[in-house]
Length: 338
Image 1 (cartoon, rainbow, N blue to C red):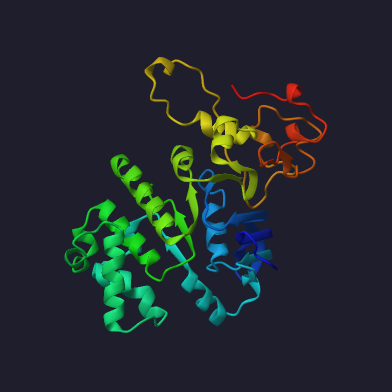
Image 2: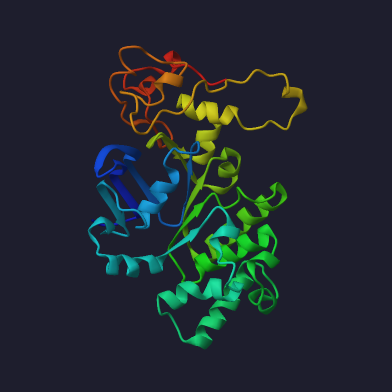
């Protein structure tokens, strides 16, 4: 398959985890259930949704850490589902990962130098002197200066923001093309979050990286991502340019997520908000039809609870999995988000 402008192409990807009882399988957790998606070269795509929606599992599948149950995943035109473990190891030189908790993702027994150097050692890149130069440059790129000073430290000797900078240095050390940033600022103080996101943007522009930014925070996605994909119960329910999605959300779930963003204006403190009722569905036995319908205020009986809506294309490159945007329904008849 030709990659064209896309570095990642997903075609109906499913990731099911078996539930075992003694020696038999009694069911499956449908963590990712039929996701089709493209990620363009050089963009930041935010994957947004509640905890347990399948975001991290999808990110792991894209870089080969989890094998999909079904579907195809193309990375720069290569179907990684057909690669052997040896071939996947070669592919992983081109990807980096930034985990949510920098303290647990960095080995406490390793110095920062050794942690950042590890991908080069595992992939047998460069000699000792070349690796040292690359590690010091990476530390400098993430603003851990002077790099020699921080290289000799252990993770417990650094602040949370400094540890996450070291984790970012490790992710970029092998000059990857693609990075999965899984909740990279969630564990940090609010004052540090914008700083780290700005750093990631600088590094993205400097190295020409493509980033999948996994988060549940719509506010940070607004400022960091080029496009936003909304994920709910293992499925993509809305996709489009960040500003378009945030200023005019189509899917009722997206509308509810935006309503949950804290409003700093004290004049709005008494404004009634639309709160999502109920709980996310079980991924073992999800509801028939649209998975959001038990919590949706626009639920249409006999339709939403019978057939799963496809992704309808609306204006401004928007895709939305909702019957409110079925072909033939006019804008004036669609419920509006206030």
